[in-house]
Image 1: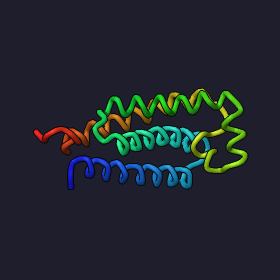
Image 2: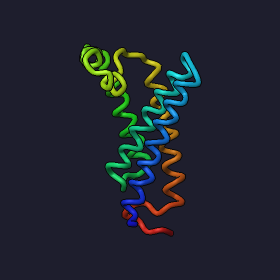
Image 3: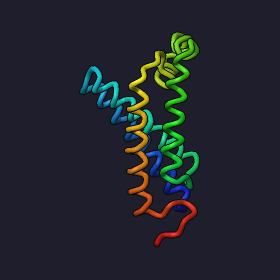
Image 4: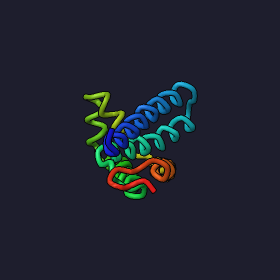
Length: 134
């Protein structure tokens, strides 16, 4: 198996684990703890999807992309578009949310930092696509 395929496989596994963690937290916790953990995990999931799409991406670039995307989605909630779409499609509510909440931006940053650190740790130990092992 090539490095690109292996990187994508690890990213795919990380995405599945992230979704499982999010569902587990929602099932085990309630209130703000579950909500903000879900916000951080949303950005972690976006990070893993960035790596899945672009396996050569560096950890900082993937984290920045995930954070920018998450913040853009949150800011989009200042319009009526996500709420209208969520009313028609439950999946859209999961992806886009429906109402703006400023503290979510902080938790997206927490998720981006955590995902970037894990990505850096893993890529330092496993050959990254397009780079030879030391």
